[in-house]
Image 1 (cartoon, rainbow, N blue to C red):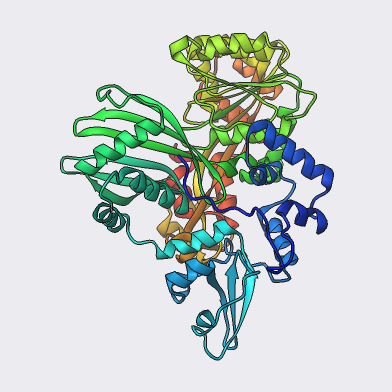
Image 2: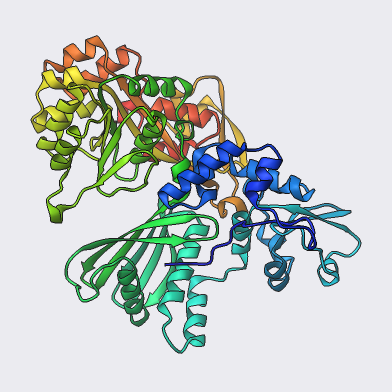
Length: 564
């Protein structure tokens, strides 16, 4: 499905000046060498990706540096609307007609000056636009198109209102526009999932934002039937099947990014439920430094990953960021002189230079059969999306034992539980003892909004009264705890984005000996702590003290050690 896509194709300093592409600007301003640009464009062509998406994914330049380069070319300041978003009141001070026509929004307002952010600073301001700010000097600054679109979201009325308007104005098919509106809102509000939940009289639409579901709107049952068929067609699913689960995929092109969408349809008592998982293109650029790992844990992970063979297990529940961690590790290991292959269900993100295999039960391509084939493909590094059964576990362990670095995920409550679970699954302890290099357990916590974050000092007595199970893990007579006040940047939630909370168990000689004796999870954890492992809760405490997450958010995702 093709939605409205705004991207920088070319820019000009004046109407009479020849247009220059962003590629020419970056090279002329020395933000990028011609050779580096050529490689980015070649990689983009190879993977059928947009060149600007490939540029950001390569890590050569950030979006902010890109914006600064374009701003320098225009001879105006750079307005970072992502870090300093305008409030709803500031956005609405410019009538929507003028804002969208000239693509402008207020960035800074002082008694004497008004700074207007736009992605078209070469277009001169009209008198009718200046008339909105009498007595002030009005200057322009450059901002990225996607950040401008995010600010324009304040003009967007509630989904239900827009649905009613679409139905009233359109005499023909309305489902395409309804789906477009929902998708645009989901991306604007950084939703990871869209839920369409049929009920007796209507259909509830909910977005999962930073891990929590919130209502976005409602559809009538009649309109939902058309929306359901529209999504099924786009995802290449059967429209005449209403009693079986179906899975598919859609690729949306939005303002400045591509969003791959996984679609799942299952029959409920009141109709067919749709869940759409949004896989944003920016995730391709995720590095190990973006995960929330402390420097010590990052060094531990890279040291284990660089070993010639062995196994790294990433543990956590569904939605805890396991795949993101593995992909970041694969990107770190991805070099021209190594062969990396993956077997996944589904393949969530494609990494340049990596061989991705999609599990396909219809053709009997299972994790175990795919993994057997990968081993015969001369790999150096293997990523297995998930160890789900004894056969896959045994093949994975044997692959790690025979000269391959194997990365995989596994469902367990914590890092210490992974070893007993694999032994119970039928994997021989002596094989685990020889292959496991590192076990990583993780959870995702919502980050405190940096724009509206503030600190409150609490004494130990106050802390013990409010958080009796956690107080003793916070040293000092007083502790400063941070939280978000709520602002336009975080949709008044006080949270923006998510970050990992981690627990690492390194395979030491002592632990390898212990594994041979079929230990319990408690025995594994005791040995790991004696060797320097810090429980996940303590990693979260560090993030609380640094203002990255709140203590309430930590307690929501991780229990103190004694409470486990």
